[in-house]
Amino acid sequence: MLSDGRFPAGGYAHSGGLEPTVAAGRVSNAAELEQFLVGRAETAGFVAAVFAAAACSMASRGETVALAGLEAELDARFPSSELRAVSRTLGRQLLRAMSTIHPHPYFSVLAAAPHQPMVMGIAAAAFGLDSRAAALAILHESVAGPAAAAAKLMPVDPFEVHAALARASARLDRLSEAAAAQAEAPVCDFPSLGSPLMDIAAEHHKRRSTRLFAS
Image 1 (cartoon, rainbow, N blue to C red):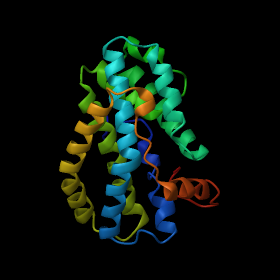
Image 2 (image 1 turned 45 degrees about the horizontal axis):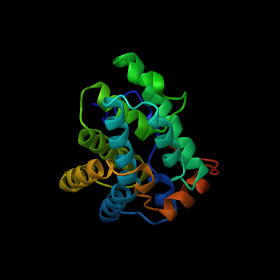
Image 3 (image 1 turned 90 degrees about the vertical axis):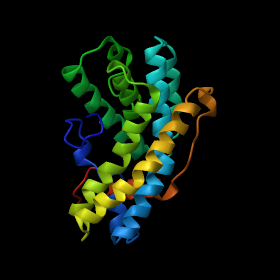
């Protein structure tokens, strides 16, 4: 439910960087789309998964004071100011949805506009899920969003898109396990995997006069 595109948390309005990537000519068919999804999962998706897993663990243990440091470390992993803003917008919307759908005291420790992985991790804890489940939810969301956007952005068979998502399932399982394991390390040692083209694309995208998606 947390990573379903129909969940009222604003994800449907974002392409996860696919729109500017298609506009730049770097993704034009189903095979290239699948490579894009894999790359997104292995970089930005994995970093988000580690932070979501850590937030879930901290909340479950009642370590709410440590969450502020976690938020600052994640902020530092967004070179693009636009991607920082997108993450906080999605976090705010997810927090609003969860506060209505499944109210829990955990959410009171968050700022007004927290990063999306932070909210996802705490939401998982509120539902009684473990850190691996939190990581898997954010990983699935990181690829399902762009996959859904692909149908509006490029001539691609939706069956091929869902086949790519199905092939990614084992990869996402592996990444979620690795993310849950890394989430137990000191926060300063959390991964900071770069995706420079995504950072550049985000900055270009916000300046486009016409666009279908917010990011």
